[in-house]
Structures are given as structure tokens and as C-alpha cells.
Length: 481
Ligand code: HEM
Image (cartoon, rainbow, N blue to C red; front, side, top):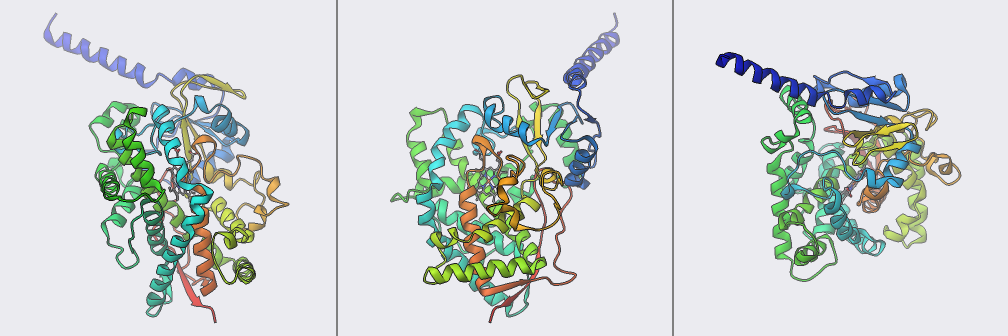
């Protein structure tokens, strides 16, 4: 046999193996009996994933399979099945999908299996009720910094981009309450921590064709993660090293996140975590604490500008609660601002910062009539569920009353999941709610948020499969007299 024939035979063999490998889920997908969406997203950087999910939901109903490259993703919009996956059968779905993030950059968000349980258990005491209560004074001071900044800024122009203002607020709040460091991003929004946290988040969006191709390649051949930078390692390394240096500098305990990391690092015999991975936990707190709450506060400003009657009701509630609390805005008084809380919840329904969540199936299991095979991805289209008229009548209407006692009970469990659910539910949920309530109360007591025609709008960026991505939200702020 000639050398050419041998090479040709090897090539054919390799191509056959690759073809079999790439199609390993093909007969499984066919056997599922669920509609299959076969469109390959070649233009992910231009795709409006929310519209795509809405379209699939109305075309196929509560279950469909996105079988684009080689790994199927089963989309589940049925709240009952979601509950089974997130809670009852958590041991079959303990992880989110794997982005090949190395240990040294793996925070709680990407941690898997036993490592995740060690870290989650260690970090959970960061936001107990007692701790949150102690944090509200710090939160209040940071909101005061924001108000000072706004006062100066509004002298030049009453129309401002609230997105950037709330990003500064979120970063300073998480830096102070969890890391114990004092920064004032309002005075210096060019600071490197701000820039890196911002980049680490926005790097998760597809920005061009090359990233599009890269994602398909990684999906097909996960071993390529070892050679390619799929998530912006430089930003992650910066946030990890910043955490490390804060831990090192910590002298007296404050009972916060940094103390938890110190304990974990001193107790190296009790778990299999590397020192690098312990310090990487700062990445998750910086990224998640930075973008999600500011994203919510900005879309909320938009909705309050557009729904003045809701804004007036919140303002009246703030005034009346403050009167009973000697004019204080703190943990106790914000607890009584139930209409405001309902407005935040309604905003999280209409504009959830996390638009799609996922899990990976670890062991074969049948739930309802669906057979989930080990290795398949499961996706929950949060955005489309929150906008589904079968779950939320008149879904496009901003109506906080849905979340008040008397109506709230009618919301089907696991149809509203802006913070996810089950043991992997957002660890910062209560922290975020307190932070947003204090900020909103202090802001609305001083200013009216007003729609500036032509400028006040929500313009979402394409190319983001997981997050509600947008650059700016402009509103007019008018001082109350
Ligand atoms: C409005 C604000 C926020 C929203 C909407 C939000 C949303 C979410 C969602 C949807 C998840 C995934 C849950 C799941 O898979 O079931 C999550 C996880 C997480 N969030 Fe948040 N989040 C917010 C604020 C925060 C804050 C302030 C922090 C700061 C510490 C934080 C830290 C985390 C972490 C570390 C995880 C991973 C938890 C785990 O896998 O165990 N989040 N968040």
C-alpha cells in the first residue's frame, strides 16, 4: 500500500470517529419526542436571544431542544419540571454548564460538585440576617456618596445615565460590605477595579464572528478550553489577586466575606481546595455583585419614569414609613416598604438581569415524560417565562400589585425565578434586595425620576445569551421641593 493510501485511510478513520463523536446525542435527541430547533446560530453576536426564546416558546410550548452543534440543550419552561430539576433532583443537576474555567479562576458561580458544596457552605454565613442588618449603615453611607455625586452632576445637566451611577453604587457597596475596603467610584469611575469588573462581565457577550466560531468549536471540542481564552482570564486573574491582597492585609476580623476566605485558607486540611481557588471566590462576588443590582436599578428607573403613578405610590410609602421611624432609612424601615419591594420584584420579572439559566445533567433521569441523559444541558428561559401571558396576565404591563399579599399567592412556584432556585439559588439575593431598597428610598425621597422623551429608553445589546445587556439608561432627575 502506498503512503498516500495509508494517509487517506487514517484521514477517513479520523473523520469517521469525529463524525460519530459529534453526533453522539443525535439518536437520543430524536427519541425524546420533543420539538427540535436545529438552527445553527452563526450570527450569535447579532442575535436577540430573548426574541429567539420567545419565538420558540410560542412555536413549541414549554419544552424544546436546541440542537445546534453537538451538545443538545433541552429548554424547559414548565415551572413544575424546573422545580424538580432545581430542588428535588438537585443531585442529578448540581452544576451549571462547563466553560472550562481553571481552578485558579473558579468562583462559586462556576464551581462544581464537592468543591461547590465546600465553598457554598463556607460562604453562606456572609449574608445572614444579622450580618445584613449590620451592613445597612455602610450601605446608607455609600448611597449618600451617590447623592453627593448626583447633586454636583445635575448642576450641569439634569439628564443623566443612571446605569453608570448604579454601577458605581453596586461596586462600592460590595467592596465595602463584603471585602471591607473603602472606595469611591463616583469620584473615580476610571479606577481599575471598576474597569476590570465591568470588562469581566461584558466579556461574556458575543461581540464578533470570531467569538461566534470559537463558541461552536468549544461546544464541539471542550478540550480546546485548555488552549483558548474563552472568558477573559486577565480580568479574572486581576480580581483574584485583588482579593488575595485584601485577605493578606486583613488585620482584625470583621465577620465578612474576607474573614470567611481567611478561615477557608487556614483550614486547608478540611477540603481539597487550592489556595488560588479560595482567593478566586472574590471574582464571583465582584462580578455578580457589580452588574446584577445595577442592571436592576437602571431598568427600574426606566419603569418608574414611565409609570409615574407607581413612583408616586412608592414615594408616599417611603414618607409614611419614615414618619414612623424618626425619619430613618435603615433595615427596619425598609422592611416595611412592601410596595417598593413589590415594584423591585415586578421589575425583576420584566427585566431579569439573568435572562437564561442552565444546568448540566450528571446522571440519567426521567422527569415527567422527559428522559434527561447524562451530559445534556438543560436551559430555563427566564425571560420568556416572565413574559408568558399564561403565567403572568398582561405580561408587558408594569404592575407591582402582582407581588402584593393577596395576588402573590396566585403566582405559580418556579414560574418567577430572577434569582434562580434550589441549593444553587443566588447567594446574594437578600443582600441585593436590601441594597436596592435603601438606594431607592434615599434617591426617591430627594428626586423625582422623569421620562425624557426620545432619551429615556431601553436599548438592549444583541449577542448575549445569558444576560440583559445594555450600555445606558438616561432619565431626568428633578429635585423634590
Ligand atoms: C438583582 C440582583 C441579583 C440577581 C438578579 C441575581 C441573580 C442570580 C442568578 C439568577 C443566579 C443563578 C442561580 C441559579 O443557578 O439557580 C445567581 C447566582 C449567584 N449570585 Fe446572584 N444575583 C443578584 C445579586 C447578587 C449579588 C449582590 C451577589 C453578591 C455576592 C451575587 C452573587 C451570586 C453568586 C456568588 C452566585 C452563584 C451561587 C452558586 O452557584 O452557588 N448575586 N444570581
